[in-house]
Length: 131
Image (cartoon, rainbow, N blue to C red; front, side):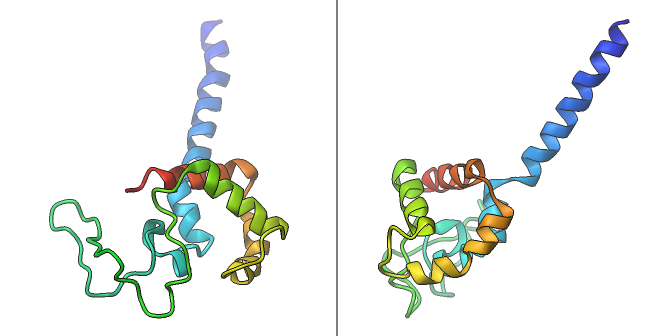
């Protein structure tokens, strides 16, 4: 009898763990093409001369060393979660229309198709933890 009861629990655990991997916020950030304007991990579009750290594999950044033409795209990494989600919601709802918001609205159909509100919160949480 115990085996029959445990089987649904095990199946539910496997399904939920697979969903967690499918909705990885770092992967979603890339899949939604956010990296195109905001750079890897939301740190901004850096120049190619920046290199990977030999031990950690993380990119080494130099302050203010953005690619020409990308200065107007905000750095998202390390920002407050509440601020990030509020800005994202305002842009997608059309309440904010300054800077590069018109570019963001062009990918709104992709965002609507691939994400839920929880996914967007997970992405903003992920970005806020990057230093």
